[in-house]
Structures are given as C-alpha cells and as structure tokens.
Length: 104
Length: 173
Image (cartoon, rainbow over all chains, first blue to last red; front, side, top):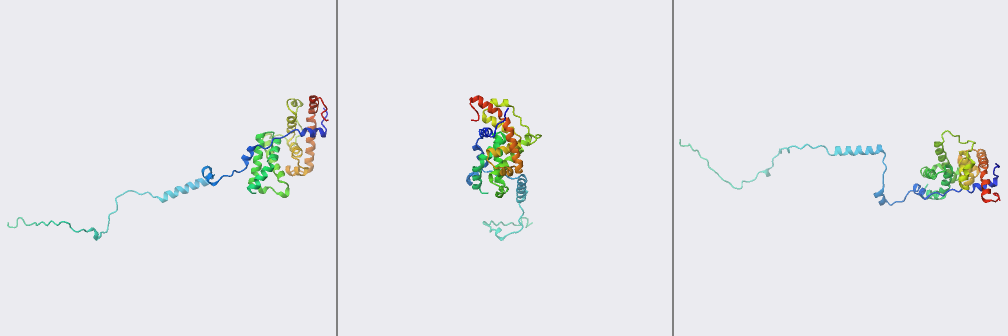
C-alpha cells in the first residue's frame, strides 16, 4: 500500500483532538482557601508517630509526678497546746467530801 | 513561588500538561494522575524550575514526560523504549473513526518516537525545546521524529483508501 505523503499525514494528524483538563484536576491540585474559624471545625493536624508517642509519654510523666499517691491515714496528733484551749468553768458545783469514818 | 503565581501557572498550562499526558498514556485517569503530580511537584519544589534553562511549559511537560515514562515502564518492563516495530493491523481501522484511528496509530508508536511526535505536532515545541524536555540531543530528536512520521505514513495509509471509498471523492483534494 502506498504510504501517505507529508500533506496527507499532517491533515490526518490534525484530526486527533485531545480533551481539555477536567474540572476535578483543579480540585485535586489547587489549595483551598478556608477561614481560620472553619479550620477549627474541619481542620486536621498530621503528627508523625514518633512525635505523637513522645507527646503522650511526656503527658503521662507529667500527670504521674504532679499528683503522687496519697495513702489515707489518721490525722497527725497535735503536739502544741494553746492557752485559748482553756475555757473558764461555766457552772461551778462544789461538793464537800468529808471523812465518813472520822469518829471511829 | 507564591500562591498567586502557582494558580496562574496552573491555569495557563493545565490543558497542555493534561493533553500531553492523555496522548502519552491513552487514559483519562492516568492523565489526571500525571497532571496532578506535575503541578504538585512544582508546588513542592519550585526551585527545580530554572527560567534560564527554558520555559515553564517545557519544564512541566518534561516532568509529565518522566512520569508517563515511569508509568509505561511499570507496565512494559521488558519492552525496548525505542523499538522500531509498529504493530497496527489495518483491519482495526474499520471500527474506528478517523480521529480514533490516528490516536491508535500514534499510541502504537515506540514511546520515544511517540513523545517526540506529540511534542512537535500537538504541543508545537521546537526541536531544541523537545531536546531539552526529553533530555536528548537535537539530532536524536530529529531522527525519532522522522522515524515516527515514517511509521505513521505506512500505518495510516489504509485511511487514505478508507476516506476515498467512504466519501467517493479524492482524499487529497
């Protein structure tokens, strides 16, 4: 079969059209603009596993050393006495106790 | 590269990059993946583009070319990139329209011939720009382009007869 000449080939090549870039490409490539308050609702933070584990370990250590275990026990006895602890007697009831067997 | 500059570059070159990737891969899905990767590369490492070495379009097409080559290599591990043979049975044209037949013929070209032809014929790059894009000598590009066109002259020859018999008029009027 006789091959095409330059003109014929060029004319044929022009007939092969390609589609334009789809709209989904822009969604995949262009960074989206969001307000900071929207980010608070929908944002994510990517943390590398070693960093995440280190943060957890530090948090655990902080909680452990900040609140040591307290063993419940009797309150410590007071060793000092103040004068304010002494109150005057409100009603004096004197009672005389004599010798019962004095005459004997 | 600022956000505005990146958006401008994307708007200006997205179609060329996508078209090239589509023609190279023959798949819309692969073309979109390649185009996405191209622009994300520009966003992540803009210092890779040196304006002194060529236009941004050539740079982006070069990145797309490397990605397309990588994808092709994953699927055709043992095939020579610059293989001379072109396998396109003339009978296959009967079920295709002219545009599809041309696409099938171009897609049947060896990869290095195909990229040279697409960059020259469809993206309008000069021999020097193609050489920069594909990282080859100008003479090598010229040779690949010549062989691509020779292959297509024979592969598409049945279309000459098809068009003549279909329309009943001289094809090359």
